[in-house]
Image 1 (cartoon, one colour):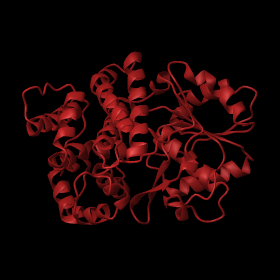
Image 2 (spheres, rainbow, N blue to C red; image 1 turned 30 degrees about the vertical axis):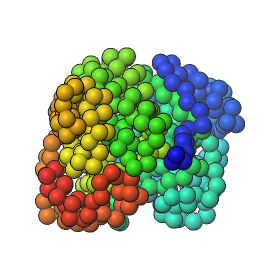
Image 3 (cartoon, rainbow, N blue to C red; image 1 turned 180 degrees about the vertical axis):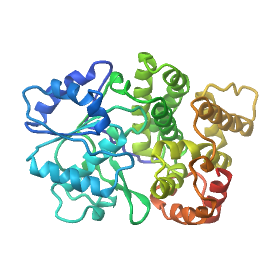
Amino acid sequence: MNISTFKMANKLITGEGATQQLLVEARRLNMNNPLIVTDEILQKVGVVDQVQSILKGIANGVYTGVKPEPEIALVEECAEAFRKGQHDGLIAVGGGSAIDIAKSVSAFARFAGRIDELFGTDLVPEKGVPIIAIPTTAGTGSEVTNIAILSDTKAQLKKGIVSDYILPDVAIVSPEMTLTMPKSVTAASGIDALVHAIEAYISLHASPITDALALGAMKLIAQNLPKAYANPNHMKARENMATASLMAGMAFGNAGVGAVHALAYPLGGRFHIPHGVSNALLLPYVMEWNKISCVERFRDIAEALGEKVSGLTDFEAADRAVEAMRRLCDAVNIPRGMRAFQVPEEAIGAMAEDASKIERLLKNNPRWLSQEDIEKIYRSAY
């Protein structure tokens, strides 16, 4: 029997109205002066005011400098605000970018070196300050994972800090917090969650626990993403998508992700395409590549996505999985090619070289990829 471990945020609080537990949890973690890490948009639409009203009685500051695909400089800026304000905890309110910045600040706040020294696995020397994560998107799963992804502008790559020390102490997942998402973010983050579930399910490091979470997330996303996209105020669909994102996060946080993410990182790093969009754009093409290596698992994916596979061979069912994925992406208006984002075709060779070096992710992929293979996938996705 293979030995596997399972890790996640220390405590999960889920369901409509779950945010009301924030003050109790902040006090339990001895936060008397937490820093709220968020962005200007969430401040403008009143989400930050809502969070601060729940935190009555606790002094708190607000950092609103979060940007999509956060750069190292933002972490340094937020860490400086954290130190200057003499804060004792972090409350991340936002999508994966806000949560990843908070996790990075927690790792960096008590670290004397440069933040780029923490890129890699298990390089954070000790547990940092406590973190409460409140996602406002349903996609990244960052609220339950031990990784923070940042953009290294010099290298034009996404890089990760991977450490159990940055697992959030509390994740509060409440569907009403996702109501501010634009339709495009609902689509990209929802497909991002589906990428997490699919890659976790076919990962070489999958386990029975991650399998159950991944398949459950796929079913919820297939059934609820179109509803949440078509009707942003569909609270049940929002709740199911928040749950699916959480489940997918727990799955990939333990089984890992693979080639989709490895190929998406250069797209985001070089051309600033949002992470969820990059993943969604590449998923069908990487699925085509991977299916020969695990057709039985692709049969399960097809079923989870609502396909009828009775009477089909495993290879036919695997084709149905890819077709179902394309239809779902089309339904929520995910572009089919990199050309739509003005990615120059002559950049493909350099991107393939960059992606081939992301061994931390490629080692999870069920089918081995050479740099030439990666280039072929990029060209098919162009």
